[in-house]
Amino acid sequence: MKTAPPRNIDEYIAGFPRDVREILQEIRDIIKKAAPDAEEAIKYQIPTFVLNGNLVHFAAFQKHIGFYPTQSAIQEFKDELSSYESAKGSVQFPLDKSVPFSLIRKIVRFRVMETRAKMAARKKKK
Image (cartoon, rainbow, N blue to C red; front, side, top):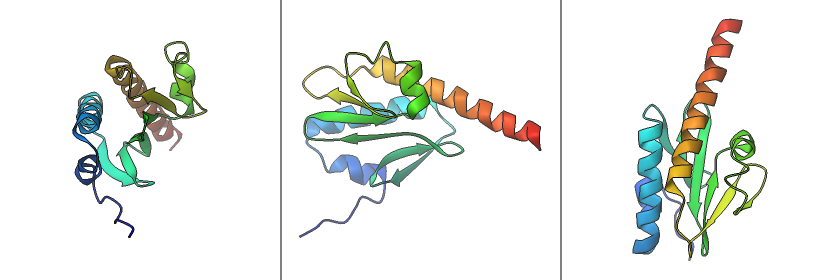
């Protein structure tokens, strides 16, 4: 039997073991503090923060936390992310190592600045 997809981030986080829930909640709190104007959503069945478009996504898997801050953020922090598995717009933080919360905070702040700069540039064009 297939379970219904989560309707919100609370439901998403509730579906994991306690240790993973604590990590997910910490990431959520970091994003909320670094991007207080962003709205919470579920997109692609994973937690998403939206600020004039998708800001960041995150998700839990069996052996890692997936963090999806877009290609530009991965590129901007490539040196600090070099010890993690990453792809064009995503990075994997293994669950058997400590999650780099301070790096996540820096990446979210970068995404907020990037998004606001794009919003300002669009307003100038009008």
